[in-house]
Length: 450
Image (cartoon, one colour):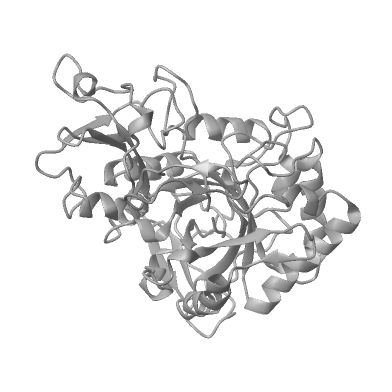
């Protein structure tokens, strides 16, 4: 939700079987997620390219089944609640950039919680990554990679975090190189080129040479000097284990109408705002292999106030892309009634976010305990975007979100296109693993431990 997420291993041909013993890195059993065995064991290492390390707890051939853990929710969602055995890795969010390239910041809560997170991951044979940046933490990325001296300092800062906390990898969530995010990020025409130089230098470090490096990215390749997507990003694939395309927040309160939060396809929609299909085409067209692309999937949705008079079409079914009243933005699950606007990192006034985690759609009465539309709630599944919408005609609140059906469709898309896997934002947003089980089930994933 304009805030990220990711993790790494490598892709596996979803038609191949797999059985392999991993080198013992942690005391706990080493586990990987692979498609079910259907024939004699065959390893097809289509993921990490030659020269890049596999995950500490996996091997080339494992599927990337990962997600971001929101560290600020640790008091109510401790690491012990994560369904560790269903992931190959989990990424802690976030550390943030600072004006000093030699310093990467962790707030007090995150610094206290990160060791517990890493320990829990390793106890379950899962990789622990740390994400740097995010929507509110990318202010100084451009500065950190702008000069040779700054890049050297930033490399040392990253390696210092890896060493201090025993991390298996780092996720770079820069939102966005040479493209403004929150509104006050430092940006420069050479951001993407400098980012590549930084990653190349980082890989030369003896510690970073053996860890997982990932990046959470937008739906189009990194912006070049003129602000348009770079035509060739293949060099990034030689230093990153994978990228996670953040295929969410495509439509929201900033959009002209209600629309799908995370469309699988938009070629048949009235407005092409981006989708998983177009994102995969854009990144592979620029030279980034599909086998190193992870699809970011959201365990949350966006709410809109939609008047009853426009919420339904002529057949009395929920209308797709109806207008909404922006001045009546509904409160989301993290918005406090009567609290008024807050101030963001740029000093701008920010109103209600209006987002609902999947589990909150259940507690708020939009869905029942199994993730289906609750009694009295209207539901429609858009066959183009492959995403659902629900509507409460009493409160006049419509929500664009993902459910088990849409997650299963995304899993099939990943498998059909030989992508690396999936990354959920965020792992605490699900309810009873309804979404996680749907996407994993559609990919036929099984856990193999040694």
